[in-house]
Image (tube, rainbow, N blue to C red; front, side):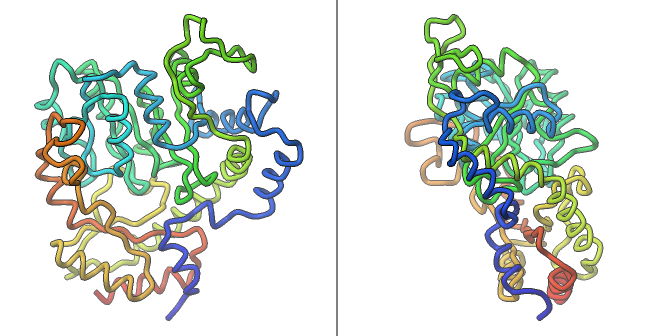
Length: 389
């Protein structure tokens, strides 16, 4: 076979920035350990301050808050927007479970909305499912491909809803010129180990509204209000009930370097993705390219396809894996199909669980995972095997 089998095997884990860790990250983390400065609020110009500054600039947002993980970012966003128990959130059922767990964790109710092939909302279905308790719409970008965020923003404004973006899998992606996360009231990102940039675990949120930012910042710090690095004050009128969702200086030290490298990561991934997209022969094949809102401006972490049936999808993925090509199927169960959530049983009850298009799409979609390390041989191997199908 062509290509380095170790590079292809590593791509199976969906790791991007993690594979590029080198002396720069080691030096940055070592600096924190040598100074024994591990807590952001003990330090002027902390590593976390520096990371947040870089994130604001990279995302084009006025405010950024680094937190312990992507789920924490969503939870802090919901609290910042004053979503509370019993409020309903329009959300896709085709997502990682953390998206919906974050909603349930504050006592809110997920209202599942159907999707189209781009994984954007079916806005007619969304309109039908709005009630007097609906407070927000939460969109999810899957495997680097952004959904129709500008249309979602217009829908949210028309219906007087808040908008949140789950950008965990889409750092650096754009949709028709708009950066993901920016058009929403709050955009949420993950820095977990298999994301484009990583600090092992971690996440952040961005927004352009100071009130939202302060509320999220205080919530992530046990609810107390700080003036710069002062001790948290729970007698301040800005204080609220909160949790400890803070990121560590070690994580931020790693994240700063990964962020600095992210532009190169994205350029390489987009180049690889374009090569694969342009060289796959779709004629008379049991699959085709999946529709995307803006394929060229994905961050490039994967290449999406859709098969003619679930049976063919499973056969294709099996064949690709047997030939050391990192193919995945993602979410073969919608959130409301898991036993924990099925039929609204257990500790919560969904306001809706009928998404026929999502039920049809989930068994046909598959992705080939990209890698920053792919070279000509690995790319040609992927093309050769895929074109034999």
